[in-house]
Length: 112
Length: 112
Image (cartoon, rainbow over all chains, first blue to last red; front, side):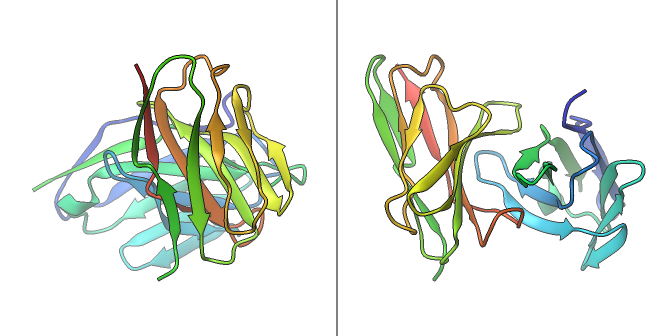
């Protein structure tokens, strides 16, 4: 089982719709969870982080964490063409190392 | 303006040559990291450092070396022992371990 798994996509949504991105992880000791956005040929940029179970909202973005089910998701409301990118889920390893492990990313396309 | 500076952005190397990638940060972060990204893949951790004069191997350290003589600087050397060095290399820093990473713009290495 991979440490962090994401559906590679591509995920295609129309402009104005809600995009839902999902991520599962295998290490029950993981404590911190991050979503990064990466445009083609660029470096990742942090969108959100979440540490506790539940929802965390920031503008059009909502991160959801369920530690019991070992999944974290990112919702993008009112999707815009500028949201078209690859979204990387990252999770800290447990056991004290707290190193970040990344999924392979989900490619999102928002169609005008 | 605080940030992480990587250089060079593009680098070509002949087989058998060592190359050094520079990474400098002025965010006053304690922890620094090197990741490698291959097409369609997630980020894989090469080396990380939590404090000056100390660093740890990541998941794919073979064929790479680093140093951390100053808090601001964490250079990566790609040695001739690295079998498949062509990749996008990303340097990152965080205020301390387990916290969100901030990335430089990346260095794209091509072996001819």
